[in-house]
Amino acid sequence: MTQSLNTSTAAGLRLRELSRRVQQQTLLDRLTLEVAPGEILALLGPSGCGKSTTLRLIAGLDRASSGEIELGGAVITHLPPAQRQVAMVFQSYALFPHLSVERNLSLGMELRGVPRADIARDLEQVLALLQLEGLRQRRPAELSGGQRQRVALARALLRKPALFLLDEPMSNLDAQLREDLRGELRTLLRSTGVPVVYVTHDQHEAMGLADRIAVLREGRLQQIGTAAELYNTPTNRFVASFLGNPSINLIETPERQLGLRPERLKLAPAGSSCEAGWSMLEGTISHREWLGDRVITHVQCPGQGSLKVVGDAGQAAGPVQVRWRHEDALSFERDGGGRLLPLTTRSQ
Amino acid sequence: MRWKLWLLMAPALLWLLAIFAAPMLHYAWLSTQAETVLTGLQPRPVGAEQWLRLWNDARFWQDTWQTLRFSAVSVLLEMVLGLAMALLLHQPLRGRGALRTISLLPWALPTTVMALGWRWIFNDPYGPINQLLQGLGLSGVPFLSDPAITWLAAVWADTWKTTPFVALLLLAGLQNIPADLYEAAALEGAGAWQSLRRITLPLLTPYLLIALLFRLAQALGVFDLIQVLTGGGPAGSTESLALYAYLNAMRFLDFGYSATVMLGSFAVLLVVAALAGLAFQWSRTTQAEELR
Image 1 (tube, rainbow over the protein chains, first blue to last red):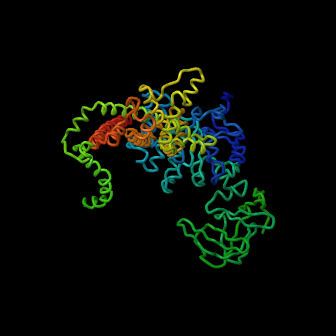
Image 2 (image 1 turned 180 degrees about the horizontal axis):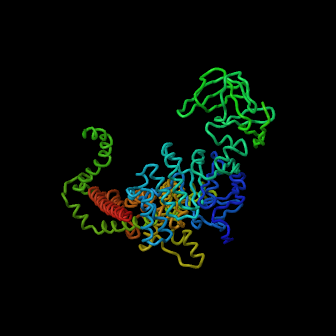
Image 3 (image 1 turned 90 degrees about the vertical axis):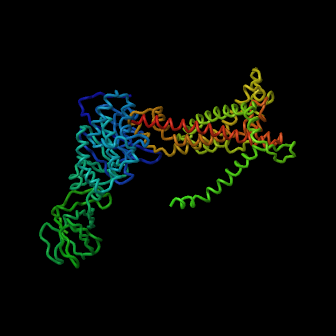
């Protein structure tokens, strides 16, 4: 087993050309990325994109077909899960149903031969940290979804891992709780000071929780960067469409496809003249969604389908003009979907 | 409101009374009657005479011991081997489906057929095992004619037949344990043995208890296997309580005493069930204490 002990590199996580193929199918295709200590990286993508596969490879639950995983300067690609010092929060939480909360938390330490006194001390600490003191004798079946998640987090913390993995830990919680917990979870994960890999298919969760986001599609990394980078300068149409709510408008021009963020579009009276540096489309309002803080206006534009415009309540119906600044439009190759350099001088 | 509950349960209760309580009551009555060839197969009241006879019947107590011994050893073997077999069949092996089907075959065979088969396999000196032993230059084993060995031959035949049944029950239990529990345990540092002890066995307990219950009830009432394999011999050394009750009625035509033996063996069953219940209670309280 090759164990490089090069301590000069950061004690983070590094994936190099990591791949997993099962029979003829490529589940993950040469993924390369790094996560620094204390950094939260979200793996984002639709189901089947390879994000869970990546997590399982890092945890050692599945075997990599090729490539390398390095943690804290040591190559761990072929180590069994028990020897990786990796903690994982499962989507189902995977709590042991026959054990009390307390025993769920202490089992791992017992298995690893931690002295009794240390178990008791760490247990009290983590029970207090996650406000689980009142639940220590409960079985998992007697806990709410949020409480189960806290127990799963507590168990992962007690592992004292060199790396934290979370597999859609919020997907079993209701929407309100999910939003409330986001900040708490971020603080908690940050406090560990170890790299965190967080799998989700929810763009809001990824944006609100992670320092950087890696977008995956069909086993391939599309783009990695901060939420702002991904949103403002997506490398391709897929990333542009996956981030943003409501999703980006795509319109066709003779040479390329334009991506128009709904909140960058403006409505103007139909037939009004366009200033320099702006483009426009004429259309008819089909309907409006009133969402309290904003209004989404759907405009039917002949030949381009329906465009979503986010803005204040304005005109409610009838013909209207949709316009946008040239620098706000993202251009994509018509076929490949890759992003083209902006053409600020071009007008429609 | 209570009477409504009884009303709802009435059909099931009546059914149980008809098929369990009525014959039991009839046997209780019959155990106080002499009904033999001497009485012209007509019941004649004799009071507690037959119960006294049972109490002093060495053959009854010997059969009780033999039945308990057979049940304890065969059920223990079946549980251990059944668990091993279930664990094996649960592994993602190539050809697992075929393996599962094949391993169930012994259980699918009618008991009399498989007992005949084993009688031939154990035959001394012409059975395959003894032929093989003699071919190797060893002396044959009197499987079915040595009281010290024959009961073990019966235990073996029973284990061979019913281990797949236990394995089937336990396999269903294993399939109900989510895979991510094992993954979580592995990440926590558990090896195969620790996973088995800390996760598999505790979560399999309800299935183990059901298998134990089924097997104990069947083994304590063992009849067909013994009847065909050994006929209770040699020298009554494999005779079970059920076989003794059967012989009293069908061979000795002593129906009154047969009923007494039946009820006597029922009492033995109750004692075993009570002990098993106590052991279960005890294991649960110790387990609960361990949780604290």
